[in-house]
Amino acid sequence: MKFRDFKYQKKNGEVNDYSLMILNETDTHLAGIDFNKLSVEEVEEVKKIQKEYEDKLNPYLKAFRNFIKENIQE
Image (cartoon, rainbow, N blue to C red; front, top):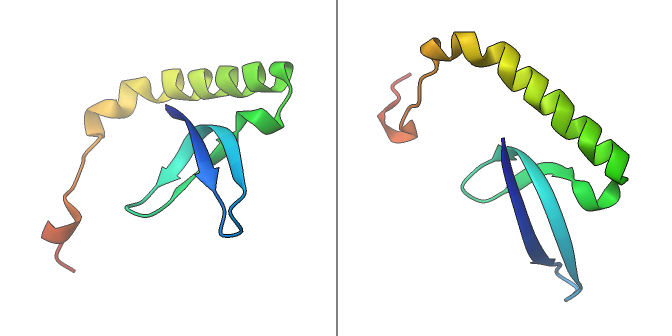
């Protein structure tokens, strides 16, 4: 899982700090869980859940594939 700390400026000029566990990323957007909105205990629980999830998926990563979008034919 990827994590990223950053400052974000809203359209109204307001700037906020974020500490994000990234769940989805496109060329133009990041989406995820903002750890700044959670308690220390909640952050630890989320990290624990994510670690368990990754550990359970590990045996199946032999089937993981990565594709260049522009080469996909439908």
